[in-house]
Image (tube, rainbow, N blue to C red; front, side, top):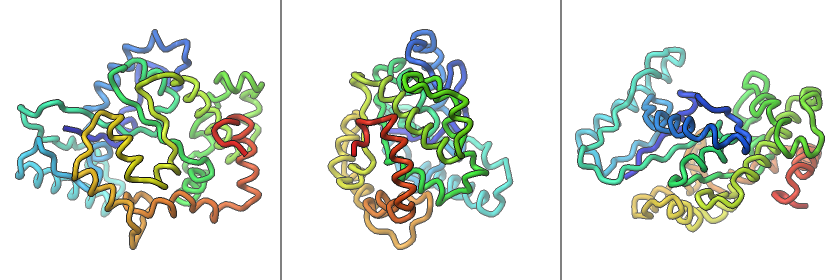
Length: 295
C-alpha cells in the first residue's frame, strides 16, 4: 500500500536542518530531519499529490477513486486555464485511505534534497533511498530544452555551497572561483561537487541504492524490478503494466511526459549539445568525479 508524494519539498521546504548538511553535522540534525519527513509526507497539494495518471489504490473505494480522480483533473484544468491562480495550489487532495488499510508506505520524489541525502538516510535507517544519477550532459540539455537558463536560475541551482564540500576543499576550489564562472559552468561544477558529496555521504549505507539513469533506460523492466524490490514493495501486475506502457514510443512526448522511449530520451543530449560543449563539460566533471564517468 503506497502513497506517492511528487516533489513535496517544493511546497514545504526543509526546516530545522541545513539543505546541504555536512556529514560531521548529521547527529545533531537527525531528529529535525525525521520531523521534517513526517510533515513532508502529509503534503497533499496538487503539486505533491496530483500527478497523473491517477491510479486506483486497493485501500480506496470505487467512489473514492472517482472523486479523487475528478478533483485532480479538475484542478489541473483550472491550472491550465488560469496559470496564475493560487487557490488551486492550496487545496489539500484527500487520499481516501480506509481505516483498515494495512502497511501503508510513502514514496517521495525530491529534486532538492540531494545535499541532505546522507542525513536523511541515517536519520531514517528503516527507509530506502534510491538516487537516480543522470548523465550531466543529459540533464543540462534537458534544462536548456525546457527552460530559459537565466530565468530559471540554472547557475544557482546548486549554489556556491558546493565550495564548502570536502571535494571542493580538496581541489582548492573557492567561492570566488565559483562566482567567476560562466552561468552554465557554475551549474556543471555544482552538479559534480553536489554528487561527489552525496556519494561520499552515503558510501557503505545498506539503505541507499545508486542507479544510473542510462542503465535504467537500457533495461527498464529488470532494473525497475530491482528498484521496486530494494524499496521493499511488491512487483505486481499493475506495476509491470505501467512500466511496459510508459517505456513504449509515445506519439507526443511533452517535456514532463511519463511516456517516452527510454533510450531516445537518454541519448537525446548527444544531438543537442555540440562536441565542444560535451568535451568542455565532461572535462569539468571528470576532474571532480573521475570514477563516475571515466574516459
